[in-house]
Every structure is written in structure tokens, then in C-alpha cells.
Image 1 (tube, one colour):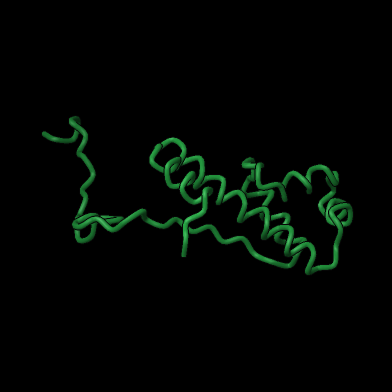
Image 2: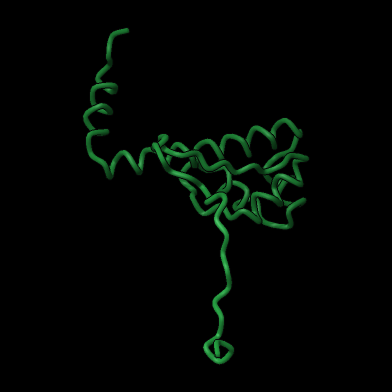
Length: 120
């Protein structure tokens, strides 16, 4: 497939580490916004309807559905999910596997320190 001017521009911009981070974060916010809007629409609700259920304003629902908004709290997402009969699932994925790294130690026994007063 032939590269467009935008493809070349984006490829060039992605060489800048700061741009890359901002670009990835924007994608995450976009995903959240699209999911909220899709669930709301599947439920047959307008932003105003959802706002009434959540006891908030239509502007706040609009903000939650905006790909530019990155202030989603877990509690707010839970309230939205409950209102839309959905569940929130947050997944942390490692950027890439690293040899020898462990999430937690296994097979290690820890002993409490003895206080100096009792060591006689």
C-alpha cells in the first residue's frame, strides 16, 4: 500500500519520544470515549438521559465522551458502567517481555526483626 503524506508525517513525528508518548495517551483516551458513547447509544440513551441517571450534567457526560479528556477517575467510570449495565476492566500490559524479571518473589521466607531489648 502506498504511503500517504499523513503516513510520512506521522512516521517522522513518531521519531520524537515526547510526541510518541502523547500520541499513545491520546489513543487510550479515544478508546475510553468511544466505548462510553457506544454503550450509551446501545442503551438508547442521549447524553442528557445518561446525565440524569448519573445525577450530573449533560456537559459532564459530553466531557467523558470526549477523546481530548483524560481526567477519567475509576469511580466515575464505575458509575457510568453501572448505569449502562457494563463493567470496567483495567489491564496493565508490559511494554515488552524482559528476561529474568518477575512480578513477585517466590519461595522467599521473611523473618521479623527481633527487638534489641529481647536479644539477651
